[in-house]
Image 1 (tube, rainbow, N blue to C red):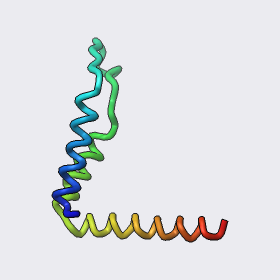
Image 2: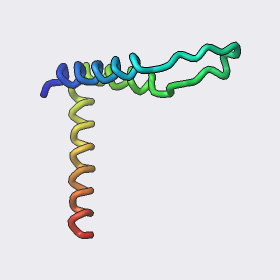
Image 3: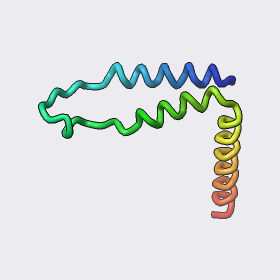
Length: 75
C-alpha cells in the first residue's frame, strides 16, 4: 500500500464523515461547535508528502503493536 493509497482511503472516509455531518447555525461565533481535528487532518495530509514522517509513524506504531503483543502474551 502506497502513501497515495492511504491518502485516497483517508480522503474517502473524511468525505463520508463530512457528508453525514449536521450544520448548526447560531448567533454567537464563540459558541460554534468545534471539530478540533481539522489541524490534525491537515498535519496528516502534509505528512503523506514526506516519506520520512510516514516511516517514523509506521515504525512507532509497529513498536507499539509489538509491545502490546508482548504484554498480552504475559497476561
